[in-house]
Image 1 (tube, rainbow, N blue to C red):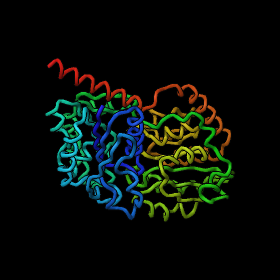
Image 2: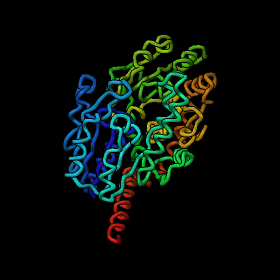
Image 3: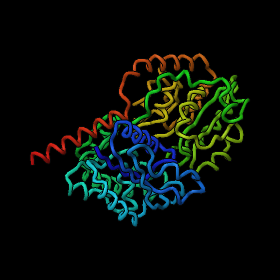
Image 4: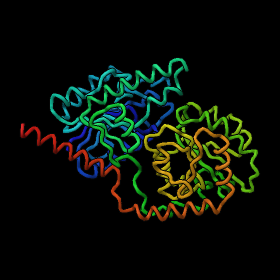
Length: 414
C-alpha cells in the first residue's frame, strides 16, 4: 500500500498530532508500506527547534518526510503551517509518488494558509480514498484567541467551513464517541469512530520507575522524596491556563502535611507568564521545559499525580499515557475526561468551572498517600486487562488497508 499523509504539524513540535503521526509512520514502515508525508518545515524556526533536520527526509524505511516552506500560524512562531506557494511542490511530489490513499490531518488548519484541500483533486481524479482526520476542536479555541465581540460570528463561520471541508472527504475519522456525536450534530456525512488514536500500550510500566529519577535526569535531587504534581502539555491559552493561573495559588491556603512540588512540563507562548505567576512564586514550582515524546512515559511514571485543567481535548493523549504507567489523574468533569477517567477509580474529576472544587480535590490527592495508592492499584489491575488489545496505530493501518481494498474493488467493477 502506498500512503500519502498531509499534516501541518510534525516533530520536533511535541504535540499530540505530531507524536501520533510519528508512531503511525513507524508502524507503516514496520508493516512494509510505502509512505510520503508532507509537513510544515521547521527550518524557519531553527532557533526554537535546532534539531529540525532530524525529522525530514528518509525517517524510516520506505517513509519519506517532505517539509513544505512554512509560515507562523496564528502569529505563534513555533506553530507552523505550509505556505500557499508550497502547493506546487506538494502536487508534483504527490503525482510522482502515485498513492493508493491520501489522509489529511486537521484539514481545517491546513486550509487556513493553503485555502484549498491539498491532494483532493488528485484523489478525485484517481478515485482513491481521501480521509480527513478530525483531531482538534478548533471551533472552541476561538474564545481563547479572538476578541469577545468576534467569538460568536467566528464560531459560526468556523463550523460552516469545517462542515464544508470534511464533506469533501470520503471519510472523517475520529477516535472518540463524543467527538463523533458532535460531528454528526454538525451534519457531517461518513463520520467513522474507531479506537485509532492514542499512545501504544506499555508492557511493563513498573520498569519505568526509578528512585532517583529527577536527580539522574534533571539534577534535582531534592525532588525525588516529595509528592510530585505534574502539569504536562502545551503552555497555551487553549489549554485553560487562565483557570489554572487564577486558582492554583489558593493551594497555599490549604493545610497540607505532605512536602510537594509542582512540575510544569511543556513549551508555549504562556511559559513566561506561568513562570512569573503568583502560584509559581509562592508555591514550590519547577519549570521542566519541553519533554521529548519518547521520554514522556518515564516522566509520568515517576510523578505521583498528573493534573490537567484542559476542557477542549478530542482524546486526551497525555492522560491516557498517565493511566498506562499507573499515575492517577485530576481533570475537569467534561466530555473528554469522562471518556478516560472513572472518578475515585483511576482519578478524580472536579467541577469544571469551580476553582474551589479544583483546589479541594488537588489538596486531598496531595495530602492522602493512601488515596493515591488506591488509585494506582486500580489502574494497574485495569492495565492488565487491556494489554492484549491491539495498538491504535495497528488498528489505523488495518482500516486504511480496508479502505484501499474497497476502492480498488470499486474501480475493478466499474
